[in-house]
Image 1 (cartoon, one colour):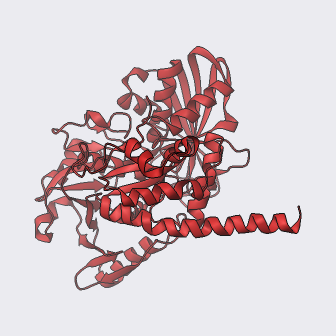
Image 2 (cartoon, rainbow, N blue to C red; image 1 turned 90 degrees about the horizontal axis):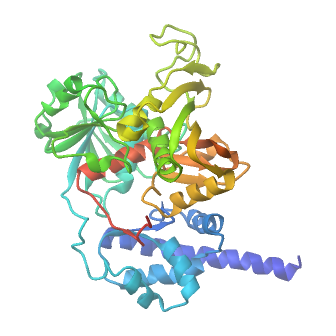
Image 3 (cartoon, rainbow, N blue to C red; image 1 turned 180 degrees about the vertical axis):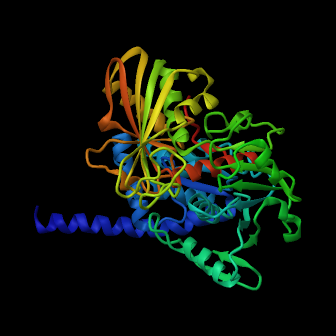
Length: 486
């Protein structure tokens, strides 16, 4: 390549950086003033860096087979700021592909494509009042939920993280600093994106302007949330101490609490919800809900679409799961079989209820699945291997093409992601917000037998599913444009 050609390539990169820099304040303005979340094939562009925006544009080539640059989408983002738009999630990637093919005036194009929200601020489907959220427990899932809630504060999200509940530790000032430090720094997910300060006298942690009260209590019975100005709240129980109606019902006895959500599989008659699959079944009478498990959330959407398209006669789910705080660093007593052995040193064969739990979200799978799990010495990101017998024949290419389409243009695009690379490994999926990611290169299909590999961030991806349930029960709904097919 000549020096002139090299200079041209660099100049194009430089020009695209400059355009992306211009887009950032426009995307921020749409979010804060119009409640419009700009996305790129489901990936939010709000509060993202220049490089991240360029990478997300590059992603389009992999999924659509066509190039899309910021030069294609910038006119659309600019035109969106000039239109009087109502609240929605707008996928500028999908719009950009269509706009590039049609070559129309951007304002005219958007008036047609976004007609539902042009000059429409009382959009049907977007409603609700600000909802108070309390995190009961502040461990791995609790802190990630806090990060996501703080990130989404504003822009019409309406969810307000008002308090966290933890057990008393004696020196309150020191305890608060420790809690804030764990929120600020994370060995897996990296540093908190923003600023955090502590007020020991007020017992608060302030993160990006969100004042969060830290309540010290050993049981729900000790708390009256109205004393802290909290009312009609949703309590998200991250402790896993109680999993049945009697135990979780303690939260509902507290003044100021409307609902309780468990971030673990529920027992008894508690509805186990996988957002995107059975969240519409939640009724007003359901005051205690379970967000099921990370594994259940990862596999149910993929199983749902495969069953709808090909039919599933039966199958086995093998989970390769990162170790968790429930296991021991070195060999010690544990009530569970094998889990007492050192987590960082061993692969640990253990049980999982995920296969049976599938039927709670998809009754048609009752009795069809078996399952086991292997805990492995990695701190985050797991994999589910779905070994299925289908009702009709297919091959790997057709199966992958179907799953790719489901990840891009279906009601399940927030739940199912898709990757087609021979080089990806588990750490590549840290922070992925989907419930599960199909690894196309690993797919095996021969006749009616199929094996599908699904990665999932068992911490972050699962937490995003919990947030989606929170939004649903709080009547926080957004139109997603352009409309998904199917």
